Each structure stands twice: as structure tokens, then as C-alpha cells.
Image 1: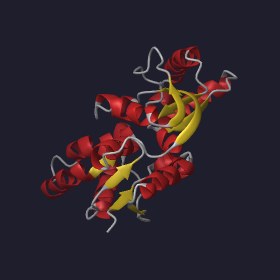
Image 2: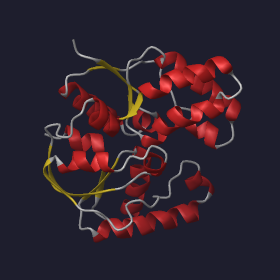
Image 3: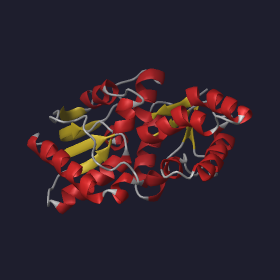
Length: 241
């Protein structure tokens, strides 16, 4: 019997990049998993939490727990959202014993997409083909809170036709940071421009990451600079045939 995976697509994927959620589901199904999408899912609560609206964030986080409390696996196409759920739900529910306990029960079942592939499905070659040169951007939460670095690169190196070229500042922030980019637009824009210079220097035609929020920031900066370089989520690359 195929194991069931619940996908949490995140706000940005749901509203702006639905193709990423579909690609993730396609890869998981190709690997033999039964994929479900729970219609009541909303947000991980990170925007409210990071903006200081902790009461509102707590309500959203509690809803997440109610929706997914019986899921065997919850797979997420975002290091940022995964980190919020697995690390910071404990902060949100620090004074509520029952929900704090549920957060602890839920956390080990929440997986960022690339880590699920390499550590649960135990695969690196998913049968993908993508002809082109790509470079990889390490998103902040995935790298610094989840310590995800080599997994996405191993997956990319197994894609037929793909050449991975490292940029000089792969680990530097893209400047998005959610509300940071709104509160500090000049700083955010400067960080993005520095990142774009490093991406361009690789000669890659595509920049890949595991967070659509970072890719949205980079695509905006690339478009503003008149660059033909495109952005793609790792799931889209792995879904290519």
C-alpha cells in the first residue's frame, strides 16, 4: 500500500506559484506516494508572528495543528515555513501545555520537500531531465535553522542534462525576509542586487531554490535589471521530464 503524504503548499505557493505545489505533488506521486491536499489548510502563521501579532499567530498555528494532527507526513515546499512549524510553534505555545505538547508531536512529521526526498524517501535521482546550467541559492531559514545545504545540490546533480555551477555568495541572503523587504526596501534592494551580480557571474540561465519567497525577490530584481535569467523552485526542476 502506498504511504500517504499530506502537502502543505504555503501561502505564497497557493496564491502566486501554484505550479510549485503541483510539481511537488507530481514528484511525490512519481515516487509512489499517495498525495493528499487538505482543503482547510491556511498559513503557517509566520507573517503574523514576525510582525509581532502573536495572538493572531497563535490562532493560525492552532488551526494548522487541528488540520494536520493526524497526518503521517506533512511535506512543505519551503524551508521558511517548515522552520516556523518545527521550531517556533514551541515559542508560540510556551504557556499552553496542551498545544505545546501537540506541537512537539507534530514537528517530527513536518518535512521540507528536499529533505523528505533524501531522508525519508531515500532517493536522489527522481528521473528528472532539465537541459541547462543552473545555480543554487541557499535560503536563510533552510540553511541556518534547518541546516539544509547538500541535499538540494545532490538532487540537482542527479538531474539528466543539468549542470550546477556554484555562485560565490550562495549562502548570502536575497534580501526578502518577508516584511523586512517592506520595512527596509532600500536595504532589501541592495542585497538583491548584490545577489544578482553573483548569479549572473556564473553564466547560469536559471537560479534554483527551495523557497518561492526568495525566488520571487530574485525574479523581481532580475526583471528590473533586464536579465533573461529565470527562477525555478527545486520541485519544478525535479518534475521536469
